[in-house]
Length: 140
Image 1 (cartoon, rainbow, N blue to C red):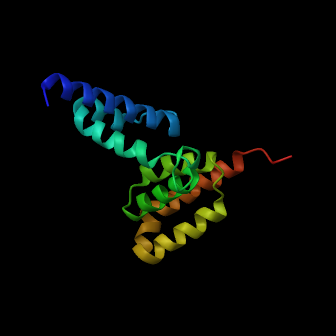
Image 2: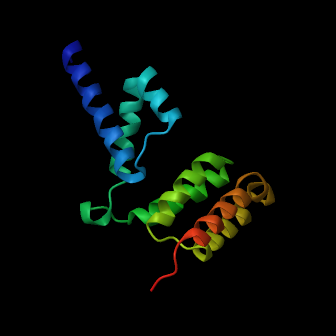
Image 3: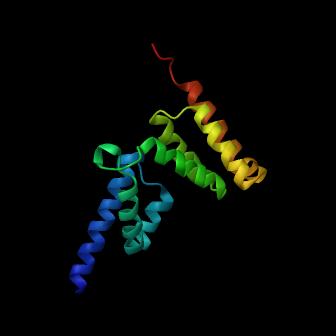
């Protein structure tokens, strides 16, 4: 592949990755933006993978976005990535995730990862979920 073709491929992958973030979360976090700026080919590869994963059922995916966001919340808690878990939680709750559903999922994480997962990430995620739920207007 020639240099110009490779550069065009990276540019297209970066654009697809940025579009994926904007479509699902409405923003590109500072850390992800830094990756795109300093390692565009790496971000492009990640962005293409993310764009493929973060499709909804209407786009041919097997799982809906709400479920995928919940899975990312739980995986981030398991690896103690509180910031990532909260970001995915906010997306999931916008898509209808409930505190009760989150509670069941976090219990599974605690069973696999131990109480440390709760203390280092899970509790903060649950606090944020309760906060979001309390701020939503009651359904008519």
